[in-house]
Image (cartoon, rainbow, N blue to C red; front, side, top):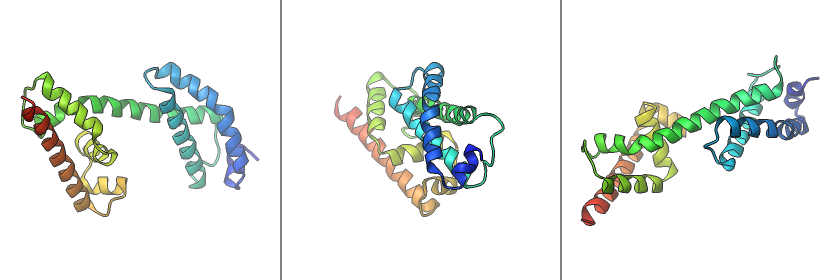
Length: 179
């Protein structure tokens, strides 16, 4: 019986064995290929990778592995690392997007740029997720509701509106009150 079959049959000690055995290889790979990430981020990605691996087995998506398990896990992790990298890139570019689309200003100075960075960093994860999915991944309100497990598109639309309103208010307060 191979590792996948053992895990499918409920042998979670086999999953623990895979986790422990492959973790050093994965971390080594991630640190080489993505040196900009903190160790904690890499470990979080590895945890997510193991979860995806387990879910793929339980859902019947993965019945056997033609290559070795470490290659399979590293491939899943690589995709997740790339997604994190892209997400971080988007967060850095969010200030320009908000200013152009929500504040209606084409040009801005360093004072407002710093305000935007600060306020975005303080937004809730829920707001960041909604705004990222809507503006950068171009997801519809229905898709966002499904992805983030909201009741419906109207709930997402309302939440997005509150996030943007709060964001604009805080930027205006910081920028115009401090002059």
